[in-house]
Image 1 (cartoon, rainbow, N blue to C red):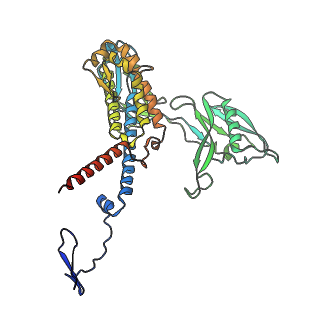
Image 2: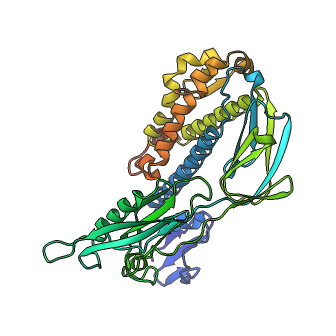
Image 3: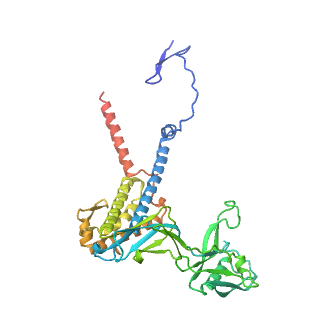
Length: 439
């Protein structure tokens, strides 16, 4: 009788296999569902190469999101820099808003320092905007051929404009052509209002959202050209005509004044420019604030020095992050960002900075003294027209206008880092095999 002994595994006892059976008996185990509750479970029960690819794609997406957020933050810091108009920065007076995206501010040389102004914006001033009903731009106009009139009133003064319609068997105006003709007629009335044809995409022909495909639309938009509340105007139909009512031009939300609270006092004004400190500090109202905004007015170079330091730190942080994730990003992304510095690398020493081989900026201890004593050079090299921050901002905005996927490296081919890692693993395995051969 032949006897065979087989081992199931390192932790299992031997199986005695005879012609009469197996001892100890082996009972079939119930198949358990793959453990997908954890990342390890997904990896064990799936195709490792496909899962690695999926994980890298997720990682790449997260990296690109982070890069774009860092770019947006850096761009915002550059936008909100308070670059002095004079090179005598010791005399410069600067107004800094705690929420510049909602309320920005400037100060002249007569402003009181050091001072703080507290402002709360209930809502900004808003002009009237008339928008016609959205229409199919290439559809034939739903008007008989002939001449039509509209009444356009601007600050109580009424004007009559005429527009013609072509609609016969051989030729017919489209909605797009007719609305463009109406816009030209309205624009000839008064420079305080402006009409334009605007395009969009929406469910133009079905009131139920998403029950039909999105369609391209056209509509007429009439706005005030004046700041803040702007000019009061309306459009109506003279007797015997119905263009305004048919196209939805005879109704619009009214304009409104701004309401702000300054130092606890509620104010109402038609403009979105708020004068403080007797007009020596001017704040621009942009959006409603959730909490009060502080505007601090100070004198000297401290503000611009701090702002440049913050821009350099954010720039270096962005470059370091791209370097750390270079295997997931196209080289063209970093090339765009570091190019403005590379073009000016030889000039940076004049303002106490140094460009590194990695495309970053190092700041010397004497940088603050350069800002105070040689701001003309700081302006021309760093923060003025044609300077580093202006050129960098152009690149950042260009990147933000491009979809993130354009800067994602191709993951179907192994990266240089992956190739090196595979080569190291192969060399280690070969070394282990050679050593084991001697035992």
